[in-house]
Length: 347
Image: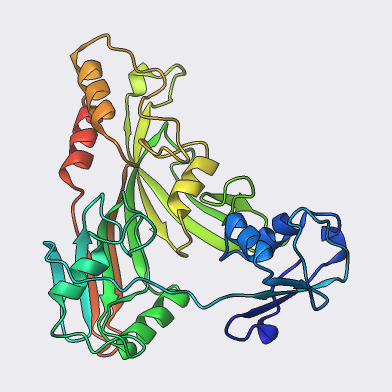
């Protein structure tokens, strides 16, 4: 494996050594595989700016082939991050004390400001709501985000108000002692109806905006991902092509780990991607569903209106990181999710 050497990374410096099995790869491709935090385009810019050195000398050709045992050094300029501005955005607050705030995030809201989403995010809303109670993270008056929900995923999220709570929550997530249950509506119905998916997950080699199942022993950036699932309800059994099959199913997923897009990747890996998932799914329709009667026509119309992955973070439970008090929060799915459930149940 080719991996960054942690001991050699000092602030803006990353040192990498080419291993024998990686020899012959393009420089930009090898760097993208080795440094998960940076996109291939960003790395190409660093090469063009003379920020990538080979054995101490700048390299300017992104297509150059790397050789075994060569040592490359990346000099990363300090990032100038935009400071989020507090915004008076309504929040559905489930719980709040001096250390934590738990909210029910709506679908369509981005968690953290980034490229193309500098305003209207959950962080912007939290800065306004908590402005008088934030003691700050790392000396800055900002909420501590320890986990995220995708923009189009709804449900329960927790954020820290101070360093102690932020550190404590991070430890709970690292130790996998946070109880997290999601509801998903998927194509078909998984068999068996109760099981565990255990794989590695890494950034997809062909599209770095996507994640993919990967072997944790073969892929340098793959991380263990474990999802427990249970089919709660199957829809359209009588309309499926094969006896015993279903058109769709409501599945409860419990996360043991929390990797990017974990449930979406794992259910697609099983062959049952989430309805409405434009990245890992099959589009808005249901294979085999035909407008032959009123329930089918209604379900088709609801599916056309459903413009996101059918995923809701239903439950979050943990011991308060500072007081030890057991906390548990559960929210029903939003209206569009429940409308989809109702239409599918009528099939």
